[in-house]
Image (cartoon, rainbow, N blue to C red; front, top):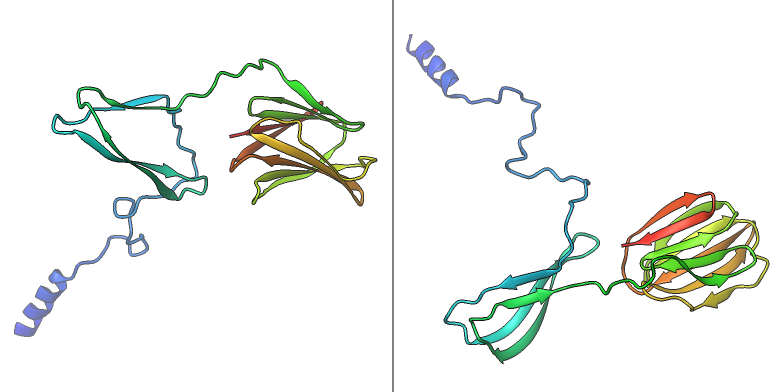
Length: 200
């Protein structure tokens, strides 16, 4: 009888999950990651009020997120007097784009290049075989079926974010390399007239 009572007591003290195949780590313990992009607004103007005891700004530090998702900081030592009545203001406004339409930057026998702000049109009837990005420096590589009918050349008639364009012949295709002035992501869109690259 004692043995049976002890067995029942031990049985009741055991805890088990309802579903033994359920993950031990839940979204409450470890948040589930997602590849859905977070929609953010552009920084225009932010202000920060100082307490009434503040007299000197020693340092400004900005924490930012890189393209690869890593977090870094940038700081600058100031040691400047400050009036706490006035807020610290951070602004980041894009210069208004003067171009409302595409401007032709380069015209070659088989392809033309036109830009507008952060967009570049590659106007050609040749078929795009592939496109990809390389780094150091950041550049977009586009391979088109056909022959460009000229030797490799560089062209530097472009404005930011586009730095220069290089073209070269290969066996059965020609390559266009669009070099950028920094680290970016890009989007490619094809239509009947050619290719549009959007830099962001």
